[in-house]
Length: 170
Image (cartoon, rainbow, N blue to C red):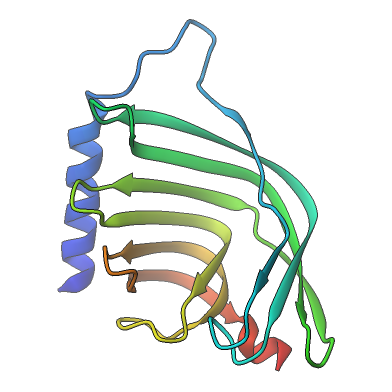
């Protein structure tokens, strides 16, 4: 039932935002360069150990096809090449993963975010999360992630596979 509710909600958002897309100049598709900076996730935040992420390749871009009247994003799209080297800083085990995919984010007025992930994507989930087990995931396929205003995430649609890098790097 949750899957159906999430899909119905996502479809309703698409329909509601279709008419609010910002106009763009002819030939201007609204895409602009974006990037993911290197990162460090402290021990206990996502995995039981500290995870360092070094960006190997990054050719991402983003656009905002719909906004609220105040100019804040209602819908954002992210896509492009992203390859990350993940390192467990306590045992120095390292893996390189392709996170090249697309993400569409719907920002609801109550602070909820609905993310549609397609392809390969990075999905860190806090260890204390309620609704889906914590971990640092690489997803492959089609996923819907609901980020609630309290920060908890649920993943009601999982059409594909995922790798928890906390297990891989342990």
